Image (cartoon, rainbow, N blue to C red):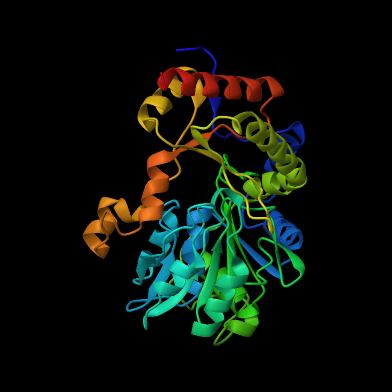
Length: 388
């Protein structure tokens, strides 16, 4: 075991970030203060959306989006099996049934044709997952949604800063041009962090008001929404909401981090280019594929193994100090989903084939050129060693 360790992802905190948080600590507002609005406005403006609602984490963002969409018992909502469980759990939280559509074997994103085949009379929505940072085919998905009156919630936990071309225009993920809502995550391994945190963007005033209401117990003090006015202290609970608030401390960090987002993405793309060049000549490795009409923000860099045993390669890389990981175990193979929703092995062959081959490599902006070279050298040496 080497003393060196390079994780698959980590945060990048600057002195400016620290100063921004300390400033809030010395202020009158630690939570429910002005930094919440500032962060929401900054993210909305960056993405090109009208509204943004910041919450405690990405899972909370998905949950509130699913509630605001009106999903409930008897409904089906389609998502990808290759994602973190929260993309499907948020549907189950509402009493609706998660349904999966298989992935495109090249991009690992949900396949629009598979999505179309999974439609039923009960289908109410779709949650496309921009896996690894690569946008799904949103134009095709939006067309299906329009034909069948579906709510579209983009799970862009991996994809802030990504963009795609459609109808002769370029769209930034989060602008909601082809969806009703988009969610982002600000966990430390993501592009920018608020420690924990998430956000929902939308262009709908109605959805925005619902999201704001549900974020804070379903309680409002807005005069125009109250059924009566008993005085300046008066508030009403108008829905069964949650305490999914984010703090000013977190939003101060988010505002500061957002100023370096494009820099972070630029460095990620440099590392990906180095990986692609180095690994292109290795016949054992399957390199990630990016569609011509998209620009990934590269949250993850995932290699596939054609023939070698994944566990042996994985454990050898870990022994050499590479914090490799696997994203993700297909959700339909999780015991909970098999027990409660009747899924089983063999349901989604492309997702299952992908899972048997995938290894997530280190990728984050603070990696030095020396770190990148070490990852490349160690990976190629390991492939050669295991393949003997």
